[in-house]
Image (cartoon, rainbow, N blue to C red):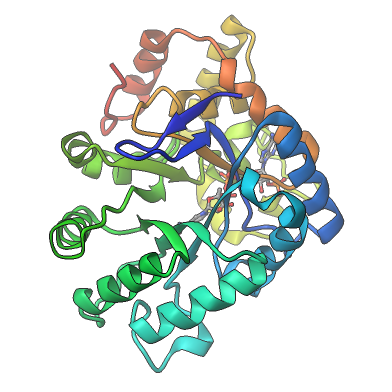
Length: 316
Ligand SMILES: NC(=O)c1ccc[n+]([C@@H]2O[C@H](COP(=O)([O-])OP(=O)(O)OC[C@H]3O[C@@H](n4cnc5c(N)ncnc54)[C@H](OP(=O)(O)O)[C@@H]3O)[C@@H](O)[C@H]2O)c1
């Protein structure tokens, strides 16, 4: 396994992490235990969850599975996604942050969270209220690092500046959608990432499984995400299948799989410390890990990307 530090921190994560939004919804406790055990075998230390995944079940299943090895993992969870229980207050109000973080600690069976993401910007709560709550939790030792998710560039810049200059802490990364098919969120923030030495964690790194190539013939395999996730229909376009075909031809030249290419390409970005692939089984985890040593010609790949997209920032 390879590891990278979040810039300007001593926090090191495996370049392949796991996304867990299916844990508790399609992945039961025994499979979660198998996946976590295999993470330990493979040296994977980065687990990404959220208080709302599978209505809180994801955190609980992870908590049971990591119980005896808590310190071997960097556990990231999130607060601030709209939640039926939180409607009376802003998503990032102090009351919601304190209540949900306490609940996450109980569910995860831990007394600290390594990375607490703010899941989404909150238009209603004054930013100072959110920052004060986070600083209190940091002082109490309940959270180690703060991170952002789905914030746009101005929200990110403003939040980080206030955090650093008024509250003396520095969020470490932004988590937003980014993969071989979808580049806008990364593009719009990438100059800020360079300037501030701020990192990016891509979600949907495999475009929900589309970039594994398993839907290549426009066939939906049994049990795959597309059998129930209606939002995936938007990916099934002639343009996307043509792009997949070009990528598959490229992969053949280098004897690698599309999954390896999709994850390996993300890892060519030096401001991406880790890729959190959603996994449903040990087999998927093992295949995803094989992306870490993958070799391919980046300039050839850039030529393919240029044919299909005019909005892509080329990795030098
Ligand atoms: N911050 C946010 O707002 C946000 C939003 C979304 C996700 N996330 C985080 O990002 C993580 C990753 O996103 P994601 O899981 O939604 O999407 P993803 O990583 O792009 O796709 C994961 C899905 O692809 C399939 N898959 C994975 N590895 C495979 C393999 N080797 N072969 C074949 N199929 C494979 C599995 O689905 P099937 O087997 O069921 O087809 C798996 O559930 C999430 O788990 C979550 O932690 C964050």
